[in-house]
Image 1 (cartoon, helix red, strand yellow):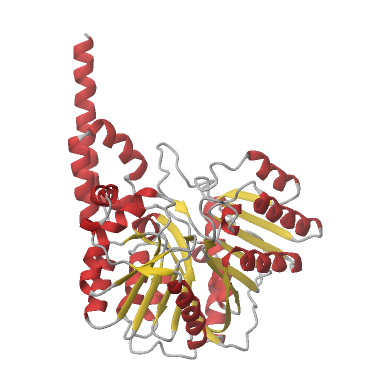
Image 2 (tube, rainbow, N blue to C red; image 1 turned 45 degrees about the horizontal axis):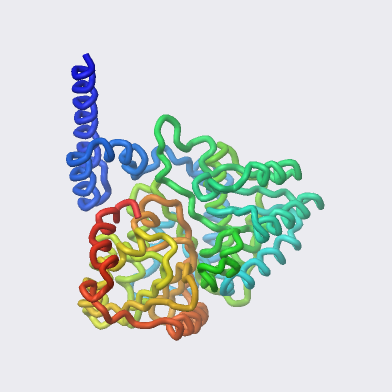
Length: 470
């Protein structure tokens, strides 16, 4: 009886593995992802079937887009696009690729101020929170109940106490260690804090693969912040293991802040089936800098491969240089090809990555790609002055991007991300100076994979097998 029952279990498991293998072939976004899953499922069903339940899904179905459900928002988008037309033309390639990915227009009248590292970033955010008059919209992937997290909460509660509406979105995976008491304290103070996947997240399977990785603040619809920092003490450089935490945020003003607000409204709508507030301010005013800018939000709810297309759009239009800073380098085949082609046609292609490890698998997997791109002429810089976590792109002398998007499959296909793309020489010059300083605290990778220590030499190829979910 036990043998028969055991045989039935094995047959069911194998049948499930075959079904999942078919699903991987028919639904996976890349051939590499399909092959990896099929091999895993066929060779080790006991491990692969549970893993597929968690990591095997690569699209969020039915993602509710607030702008499509709100005629008011649609009208406002059209109005401010007409009132704030881009001054530039976007060069030989124009703006259309970025605009179609974002489903938003490039608008003028903006300013962007770089905020380098935690002190500058949270000083600026706290200043804006303290000056808020009507509402504050806050979204971070990680909140921690530590010194910075408690100070952030204190500022939000003080704003609520003086009558400012506060809406906060957090990701359940990123905040898995956040105690309930932290959120309850905010709730008791009148802050409405919501899990980004509250209504439309996982239901009947452990579908924890999709994460809202965005990190934004909007104050009164007029001032916005976006970048790589979360709310935790390590982002202030207080963790002895990481030491200095090198990261970049930016402060935005002008019509592009409305786009940042639209993306928050979409995420809030997804979580609650409602807009964050009955009325939001869409009259941002214009800044003297008059920069052209666009907020590019990507995610697994998009019909196109928006994350990968964003990187490829940046890389393929480069004529002089493309410098990319990312803590993780696990590119898909399209980005990999675009990087190599850019280098082969003489573009100065530089990839800045950290020497310090925070997540072992993506850190190891990167070594499996370095030789390939270096052969084409791409320069790999290893940052050594602490841990480097920024997500920044510089193209030629006129495009600068700061946001949350890492150069890996997770950011390109599995996470909800956002980045601001500024088409302006002044913004590019600011980013150039910042990255030049980062390169000065880095070294150019010269060793091949075969020359690396054994743990890297043997670990990198295996880690690359996990690339579809890294």
